[in-house]
Length: 178
Image (cartoon, rainbow, N blue to C red; front, top):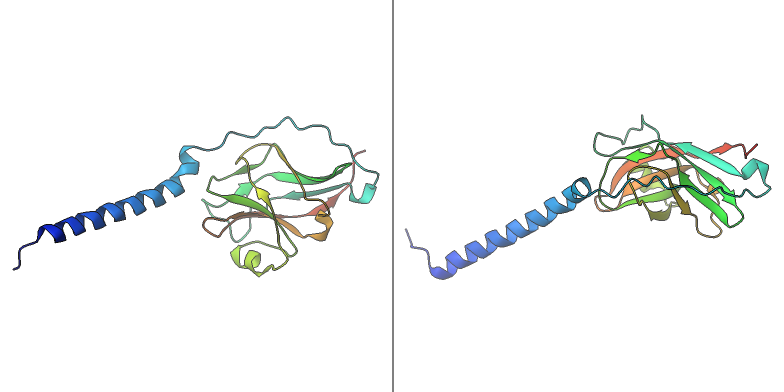
């Protein structure tokens, strides 16, 4: 048996340190949103001004709790709506919104029904809206100028870091305020 040289011992230790650093960084990426979650949004939502468009003033959705792509780690529950204001459309996640924490969640609008990862990836017309700010509570997001939720079928939350489906809800017409 050939004895180890100081160079081979140093290289082995360096490789172990490098492996440990990569493993530790990966574990922190996964654990970070669980250890340091963002605060509950619970925004005091302003009264929104509706334009005079009764049939299109409000559209709602509820996250599908029976979607095929959900699992105990990847999920979101609750409801939301799109409200047409004088300044354009606003996406409002309601106070009942709650999602399992994870890194880099984004909100998309899809032109087709989405209930799992393959549906999401098959939708070439999807629109990436904004990054999710909190995993719980009421939140408002302004849609870009010219974007009308009537042109889309589903709102989806997607994890960019791991390419994972989180949740989706079909967008439905809701009557405007009474």
